[in-house]
Image (cartoon, one colour):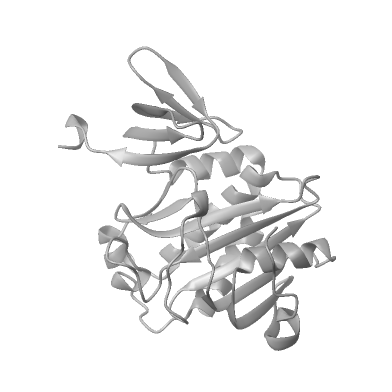
Length: 258
């Protein structure tokens, strides 16, 4: 892993929420890198590292994650000795984040604001990205770090933010994290089948015409037909059926959307 800040536990604030230990710092390079480093040194299961600002935050495909200091939720979550692999842990966090965000809407906003997921790791608010996840495990998968960023009070022009629709206007990133942790504790008790079913129910990608750029550079355009229990996306073209483990997905408009 890249260089890390090994002193964040000494210079931040620490609190206990449910059975989680939450560390909060004003600024760091990357919460994922820092928490991974501390996991290698023995940090406990259900440790979270939250930052008001990241100077080197990254999403999938090494993309920069933009956020203004203190405006959005930037946190990494450590799962150790877990029964789930990277894909399963990411789905636990994903469905929990969706439920947590929806809690901040009243019935009026729920009718006008749709919180969904785009495979494999983006959160969508009315089909515009407002959050994303990046997961990493040690080679033996003895621990998994899931990083998540959610736009609350600020977003770049191309993205959305939660406060555009949320009924409660004064909630903070810490408030959202507290609700999300409550939801994670619930989701971790789900069977694999129930977790899969809930993930599928909030997955906006299914049924859509998509363009997928595979890691080898190949482009696949077809219909997102289903999701396998192991997390692979099934994309069907006129002549072929693809099982996709990793790829960059774009939702396309087609005649069915008109």
